[in-house]
Amino acid sequence: MIRKLYEQYKDVILYLFFGVCTTVANIVAYWVCAHVLGTGVMPATIVAWVLAVLFAYVTNRKWVFHSTASGKEEIIKEIVSFFSCRIGTGVVDWLMMFVLVSCLHLPDVPIKILSNVIVIILNYILSKFVIFKQQP
Image (cartoon, rainbow, N blue to C red; front, side, top):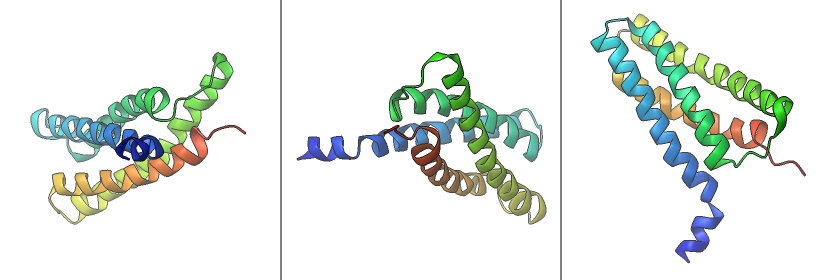
């Protein structure tokens, strides 16, 4: 029964696992940039986002959605689609950090965690139904 549930929800389970890994990478990179290197909220947010997106593309393509894109043209199309969608959700992250932390002076790390939860949900929907959708 557990195996059947795993097989049925394998993509979601793997996405959540790698989503947590991506979130941890994002938050750690943000914290290092903002608190250790002193780059400020927005530069730290952008650096953390770039690193997280690179990690997410590799893990989503290979282990979550099992991309069958092959050949230079298909892979470039997939990468452009992935990064375009991530830019959209990156804007959500950046706006939340700017408004809630830079403008309203709320604590940065809890807001970063909340922002990442929202972004993970949006990214799954976009990845499943737009970027790595199974071709009929």
